[in-house]
Image (cartoon, rainbow, N blue to C red; front, side, top):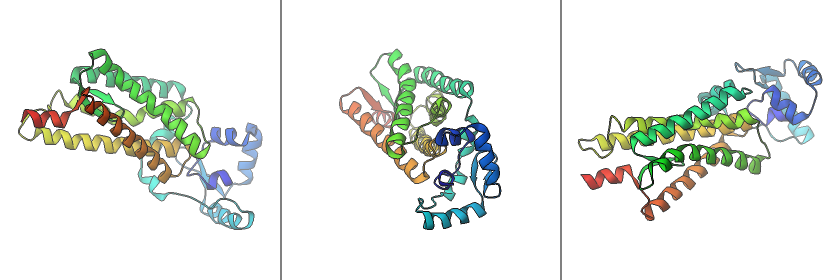
Length: 257
């Protein structure tokens, strides 16, 4: 009840990992709690309305953590990560596909991804290609380390590899440069800037949803961790700009105009 009360939802495998109970014993207790515990469309367990009422009463009497449920999570694409849960092959293929596609598009688009920012670099082409999967790998390590330090919770291999979905929006930018050049005039530079903001915003939302769904954290904490990563990415990108190693596409456009 405490696990279900302090998380949005939890999978059967996560319940096993947290409680250490055998499969049969865990199913028995879930059956005992029928009516208080229900499942969503992704077969993740959560408290029913009656369960929420009982938990609130237990929190006052037994000193359990107060019920913390973020209703806003329902409007976010948490189902994406729930559908990938438990499938190593599926999540590994998605992670590798995003990394390979991002690297290839970076090469043909003439841009390099630094964590969460695209720019025109002075690096060799092979470095530009490798920066996309490297950024994904750094984000994977960051999400695991930060959530563990903050909440003491980890996840399995499929949960880690599901982080590749967070970088799906970034495939749009190098693909778009073949159609809309950020250095072109006639307002196309502005269009590219707006597209960049939309891509980064989408990735931040996906990242917050990923951390909340996969690690069972409150959405507010997940969003904070995602914003911290974005700020760190911005500082890193700015430092590379200062060193003259990379230039922002929008700034290049301004210089050309």
